[in-house]
Amino acid sequence: MTVRVQQTSNDYGIVVEPLSGEVIAWRGDQMIARSTRARVMYETRLSPVVYFPVEDILAELEPAPAHKTFCPFKGTASYSHVRLGEDLSENGAWHYPKALPEGQAVDGCFAFMPGVATRIEHQGAAIDDLPAGNISGPVVDWLLREAWLAKSPEELLAALGSKLVEDGIAVSRMSILIWSLHPMIAGQNCLWLRDEDEVTSRYPSYEILESPIFKESPFQHVADGLGGVRQKLDTNPDEFNFPIMEDLKEQGVTDYVAMPLPFSDGRINVLTLASDHPNGFTTANLGLIFECSALISRLFEVFALTSNATTLLETYLGKRTGARVLGGEIRRGDGDVIDAAILFCDLRHSTRLETELGRDRYVAVLNRFFETSTDIVNAHDGEVLKFIGDAVLAIFPASAGHAQACSQAVASAEEIVAALAEPDPEMEDTSLSCAIGVAYGDVTYGNVGSKERLDFTVIGSAANVAARLGDHGKINGKSIVVSEEVAKVTDFPAESLGSLSLRNVSEPVEAFAITPETTERQ
Picture 1 (cartoon, one colour):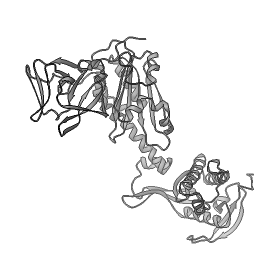
Picture 2: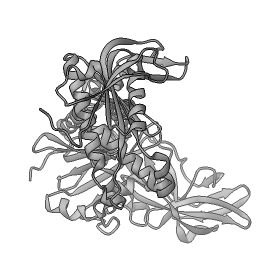
Picture 3: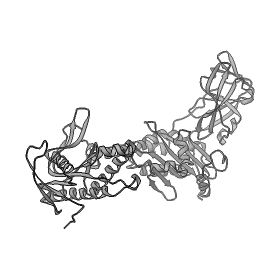
Picture 4: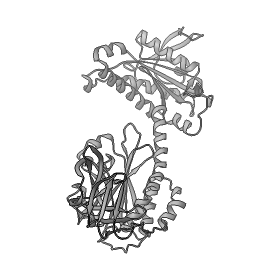
């Protein structure tokens, strides 16, 4: 293990001194504590706090086990309600039952929350604030001047770890858990190791939140709003019985901290730090990190906001469309006229399925239908633009030509029909059928709607024809019906249906049926 000399990167400190003479705490005209053994704690940039031995508190203390707070220096504070007759101050006093070294000087003592003790009288010198300078040093300079240049959360975490080590702080590993807004991924967990000077990232699914590994971790404790964790692995091993502590101890870790990183939306993310110095983190160096945590949180929040915006747009609009909106196409009328194959897929027997299966199981069937269709369309370089009731609207832009776009659309249609026909063992071997229409033409691909509520979609005759061809197939028992513009440039066996008069289509459409159940590609 490499022992590093920890510099004083910051003036942060905690000093506890006895108060001479008698000290009395009042609530209005009632005495709530009286002691000749009171102590005062000075902590950088905080008002002095007077602690009274529990034996010298005259008010009734009622334990409040549901409320706790965390200080990375003093430990986890337990609270009590303060009662004076009918007057009850909820969570009005706190103490540290398992104090960390910096807080052991007030072991067995209680302090009152601001406002509970309306005044404190004491003999001897006045309780004045300790002078405190400004936060400064290489880490602070970097946070203010250069940290924003990081291009990813991994790069930011690695640079932060390196700067802390450069400033003489014995950080051996750091990690951060950032919650996401993603339908499948719960968040991003980045881990930096000093001796390897690299960052690895994991993207846990929501299932892991129910696993013992997560439930018995400091991440769960902090994310649930229970405060932070400080584990001096040779000092207070019994307070936090997390399995990971034994693993870290075997790796040479002497001090471990997990602190909340709240984002502006209220979600609690988690930053962890571990030290391999024989004495763990110094108060000054841990104080530097603690005081900079709000700025660190905001820097990581920038990446989270960008990631969440991208995810939400891709989830609700699709990758191509989401990228266009994120790229600035956000005004009504923004968009392009493009050539594309349009696929419209409608689930058959939807009303009957809902009646027979019930609402919950029917929703599960719909989700299977949508997921199957989306996965296949994406695999063929198409994009699902929207779900319309029990139907799917997808687009295949002709960026590589008319024939390829149509072939991709028809290949998707064949695979969708075949996949849905497979019995689903999770739904009592229910198989599904659909009717698909495919048409080709120029469409307007962009924003339409009101001034404040827009929809990014396709407008044009090809979209209308695709939907009506699907309707025709649904009525006449054809799984896939395509227009002549599609059939003539693809090599899928097709049966002519002649010239069809379709609802809300002004001119008859030459249509062809493709029957994937009985035909093979040539």
